[in-house]
Length: 479
RNA sequence: GCCGGGGUGGUCGAGAGGCGAGGCGGCGGGCUGCAGACCCGCUUCACGUGGGUUCAAAUCCCACCCCCGGCUCCA
Image 1 (cartoon, rainbow, N blue to C red):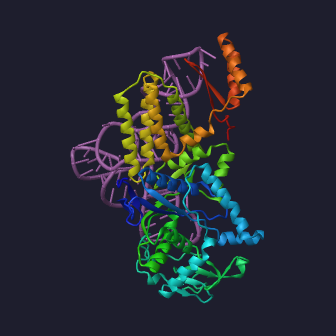
Image 2 (cartoon, chains in turn orange, purple):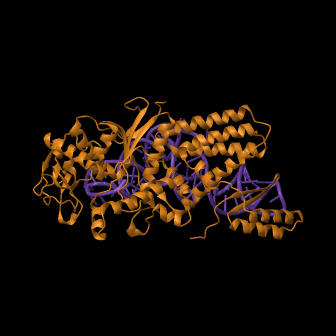
């Protein structure tokens, strides 16, 4: 266990030493997807960040209890459901399933709970009832129930927004819903014709929950009234998280969240990602273009989470190649059989571990940690060039790499993907044929066979110890 | 308008007063029949512009320009 971790808390706008409420245990709420479409790579940047956070807390010995909500009822979903005339559940299941598939492809660790909004309606009703009783909520003319932000003194403490300074956007319907203040927000939305078959009959009336209430309810239900960490994308700071604080703290009188963490957005080619700009990508889009999801993961995690990340295809290629470098290194370690380096290597290993940990402790500085790791790899490669590293030492280095990979989550999974099975007879014969050609110095035939195998995804490398082969994705056509 | 975050080499990106992180790409060299992997060198007077502080500024201060975001559903 360590209390060395420092995290940037949006509440204070500074890095703070992290200590959980209960020793050894961290309660973590991560804002999840609204399942109305396939998630895009911007969404995944946040989920990858949350995964790194979770993994680092675990690395430091904490037991993490993570909740990720599934928002399966909202305006967009209702609109689609009524358009396609299918049951809500059927529609949301489709995208929920896709979401979990994507998480797995990106090697994102599972949370302990994935509560769905629609399965917590009664809990939401109870919380709203409590807010009404305490005088924080009121019913508007048309039956919807709103939170009265003027009753909550600390409103704006997360986003640092003063409500008097808020400029009403064009789409803020002021009197339309019978709200007392345009910034009061809906806890419960009364049924409307446009909602069609989507509604719940409750003691609050016929309708559906507002957007913010589900997170407060589900967070507190699974994690208690005060949670250690709550995270999401920066766009959620206001109004979503601000409203969550208001609802939760008004209801319980206790601090809702101790550390708020927000990840910056991703841009594509220096621009905001938008369907209208034609630069909108889902994970599936990238896989269809031949990129590996692990390269996407590597790219997403390699930029510090509080920094905007500029997604480009060139950067994705770079990530793909950086990943190859890691894998080549791992393979090379398998073949080391030198006399042994001894003390200097021990020192190198100790140094890389210490510095890696220091940087991760410092607000999850993965970028710097990776730089340190790659420097280490170069040093070890130098030693292996001189055939100094012994088998036992190589084994220790591999263990160290897997230790880092507990956080990065790319090496082991990629190794499994490219695992060497038995070569087919056809390929074995081709390799043998090429060896014969090489003995006869028939380079033309040898090179032809090598190229043919490459097209089949088998890379051959001639080494002093004989021919080596490895499985790699066949070359993709250029885009 | 109000409130945030930024502008670093071919590219992606760390760093936040004093040795040019790292990845990727390109070029050259070593190794190799050739490749590949790996190593070395170069790509490098790198830090938006103009001032200022300092022995020393990418880093601190001031002004300006530009980009992205929040204020409206959003990761």
